[in-house]
Amino acid sequence: MSMKVTIRQVDSVTVVDVSGRITLGEGCTQLRELVRDQLSKGNKWILLNLADVTYIDSSGIGELVSAFTGVAKQGGALKLLHLTKKVHDLLQITKLYTVFDVHDDEARAIGSFEKTPSA
Amino acid sequence: MVEVTLESDLKNVEVAEEISRRVAGAAGFNEEEQHRIEMAVHESMINAIWHGNKNDSSKSVWLRFQIHRDRLEIRIRDQGNGFDPKYIPDPLADENLLNVSGRGIFLIRSFMDEFRVEHINGKGTEVTLVKRLSSENQPKQGGSDREHESHNSTG
Image 1 (tube, one colour):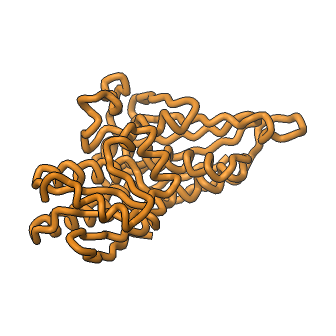
Image 2: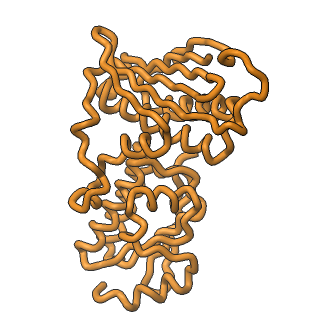
């Protein structure tokens, strides 16, 4: 199953519902282009909902890191929502869990962007 | 034992994952362990296709899964020139934490009990992944290694 995304705008936050596989190839490319596209539209607050992500590999983790740093460089913020146990465990063992701002509640996650210094 | 030769194409990564999941299940690993083994095979396949065979689909990747009484042993061989895992930077070091790449071997090592790399002259580079079965998952009766089907495919 390849990666699929649905994009919703909630207030000033772009919520991206991701499902399927974020792996080397199509999944990573799609995520990279999506983030680039949102930044070009001026959408700098991005919340990635990973609830339906079935698989993520080392390249997918790298793509999340790249998106995180890329958005931050543009003065925005990229946060993660609803990690599956598999993704949670991967971020833990790669010591990235504390790097990302991870949320379990969408409303609170969206509210947290308002506290982000710049957008 | 399951032995398969796949065309060096990223589409075959999922084929290798499927085989590894089934073999790991047959060996007695639980669902979480099956996923970890599947991920280790996924990362090894990516390395073999992308780094070893340089994404050349005229090359192939050979895999062998062997269930022993106390462990599952997986060998994956590409046709590349090999690498020395000693020289791969530590992805957990502060200066590497936000690197985009360099976590594949680390994940394989995290998920498996043993990881070895060997360059075989004239053949390519072979990695060996070993996952040990916990004592409660080992077969109750004595005996030698468990044999399974063997087949070849060009994927």
